Amino acid sequence: MAPRAVIRAAVKVFVIEIAKNLIKKQKKKKRLWVKDWIRRRNMLGASATLLKEIVSEDPESYKNFMRLSPEKFEELLKMVESKLTKSETWMRSPLSARIKLEINVAPVGDKKKARKRKSNDSEWKSAKEKRLRYSSHSLPVYPTCRHKTKAFQCASLTMLEIRAFQEKFYSEKKKLMQDNFILQFCRAETVMRYRPKNAKHNKKLFQKKFCVLSLEKTHVPVCKNAFMGILGITRRRIDTVINNFVRTSLLAKENRRGDRKTEMYSERKKSVMEFINKFKAIESHYCRGPSERLYLDSTLNIKNVENVHY
Ligand SMILES: [Zn+2]
Image (tube, rainbow, N blue to C red; front, side, top):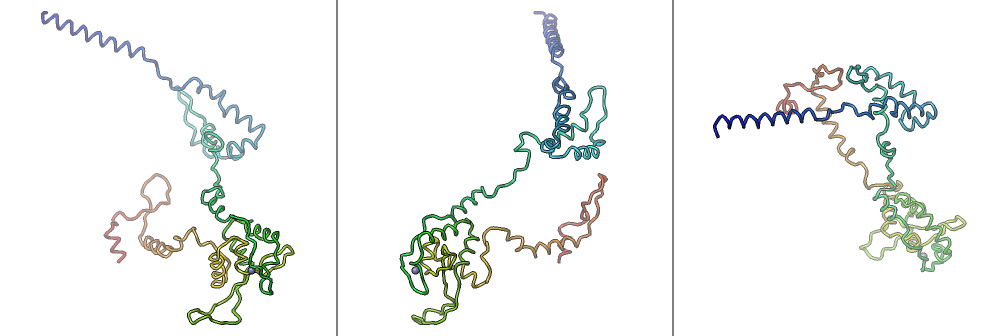
């Protein structure tokens, strides 16, 4: 093939390709700025229909839906209207300030998600475990000691009384309440006579006396074993509660969990704050509008700070 013919063929292919591209571009669908159904919002949108109806017919529902009363909404709108309104152009009309505010104020999605859920701590896993821990695990044990003396009258209690006493104890499934319940029905008395078994034993500081509430609301004195069996609690728990009471003469209190660090580091935090306040702060030099934020001097670096400190 002659060189000229080759060039001609190549040009032909090139031109065809350019023509195809041009046709494709022309055929390409024009992108819509606003979809037709959105364009109808001024007539059929929620702001134009639903909200207007609710305001006039059921202001309470409006408040529930918008989290604002109609009056408050209008007040708010007046405050921000000038800032939200955009100028109209020949291309399209902007969203009105009212719609913008309604979109921002109204909850998004379903109602449950819109409101901040209140935490229900009684349903927490730890709370459930705690409730289980401080629930009754078995029926009360009827005292087998058969005490029937002036000091202990364990045998005079009926099963009904024992059951009622145990139910009263477990009616509150909180350690704190139960500990205070234990304190109500026991007391620490000074030891009247002291007869040591051997030299190793120290003198008891006090002796514990227990009683159970009868159906006639009288206190029936019982021995420690009977008291433990009726309430289904351990010797250790009773001893801890009473010993704490004798030592501090305060009611039982919760020592677990809670905020301890704030108290622990308050001094340190205070000294750090004082140190920071030593520096002279300057106002913002940005002209973005009034700001309360203060800035440190730009000449200050870590070395300078150390010099100030020491
Ligand atoms: Zn007894």
